[in-house]
Image 1 (cartoon, rainbow, N blue to C red):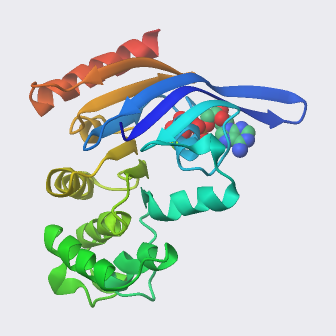
Image 2: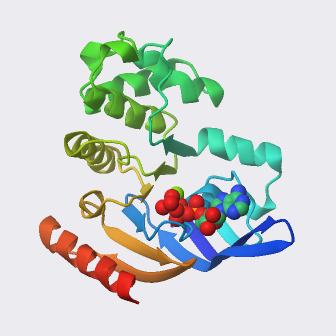
Length: 248
Ligand SMILES: Nc1ncnc2c1ncn2[C@@H]1O[C@H](COP(=O)(O)OP(=O)(O)OP(=O)(O)O)[C@@H](O)[C@H]1O
Ligand SMILES: [Mg+2]
């Protein structure tokens, strides 16, 4: 299993009040799976992602990445996990304007201390997989939105992470750009066996996933498997369940 979350609890303290946001989340993600987390605003999706990202400590429960329980790690070790074993795709992609496409892609390798010939070769491979070889010496201001998205996904993959984490990667995009992000994730899954865990509000984006975890009020409300059904049927199914959730 690439990721195991067991009975995860997380609350925030605001003044004298404790707000319980995650109330016992358990889930597993296998290598090569593309999983979405959906749920209403405030249901705890970003909190869950931030716990898995080692950005915030959970109150109790376990997160196991690959075969390493994160609870046992100190700050330095957690930072290393973040830098080397996780890949991040942010809502606004956060490409650095002063770096070329290729330098942006290589940045996590530099941060993770693995810059060198192997990282250069991996960058070549990623540029090829995502069709950005011809633009790798350009700067972000000189490339299209779709090219930026593919660059961001390539960057998330440079360290060959155990898991890619994405919080609403299509949140700010029109439908065509959203499709480009999802296509890049599918490519990552198919060509590189990448494992992707994506928070999204977008039923279209979620319908490309193998599995969709529906969160409500800090608990897992439903899990839907795509299985053999066509994408559009799965999307209809998701929309039905989201409507039910609104009623419940
Ligand atoms: N740092 C914080 N301190 C206190 N409360 C917080 C903090 N971060 C989040 N919360 C609260 O926790 C709950 C869950 O927040 P979270 O960001 O995980 O929701 P979400 O499902 O990602 O929502 P959205 O879809 O709007 O992004 C919300 O009620 C939010 O107000
Ligand atoms: Mg959120």
